[in-house]
Image (tube, rainbow, N blue to C red; front, side):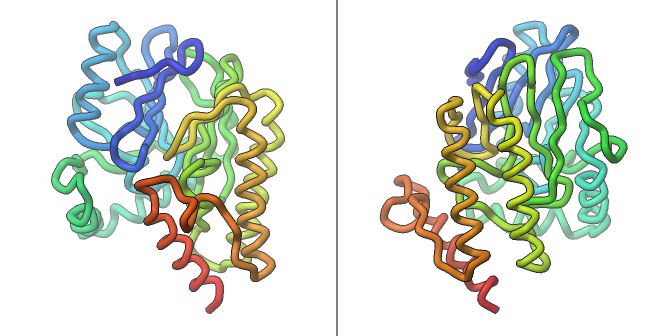
Length: 269
């Protein structure tokens, strides 16, 4: 269930679109990042941590997409952090009484229909704007906030362990997905975010994307360059040549081409 990728850092990979949950061990318990996806998976994580005597003492959501703001009662009532913008976006989403129903309806089209607990979705405590590190009793975790992909998106850099938790970026299976709004602005924000991640690349030993395979230091810059090439092609009005779409896509991930095509249509309007 939980696989160690560095000293004191473990990952659970969900069967649903290779979604990665990250566990960071601290002195009194663990920091849990982006827990998911199904209720059974979250209960299993809680059970494994309980057996190891490592309660959840803090949570963090890298960004406000539904699959990154989940929680289960058995994980406890530790504070669940996010950036101020992430938390504000979730408050806006949850102000709509039909938001959870729409997510549930969307999930009916997937293999995890009825398996995702939404009762505690999005209950995020926003850290003060500009907060540089997660407040908890464990290894220092640097917050690298940017606006690529979603409002208040943050990568987490566990400096003492050389681990970068990238959120929905630097995936080996998903192409860069731009935030809504003005496409030109979204492209520039994505390029800015990639530069922020490149600034720490020399100190990264392990990279954990929100979806896809955990990578080593040898893949960090390659993934940055692949994402940058994709986004620059969009900026120049070109169709990106990317191994994650079309015939070269990883088996089972052919649907990423649909996201790619939808993104091209949006940019061409």
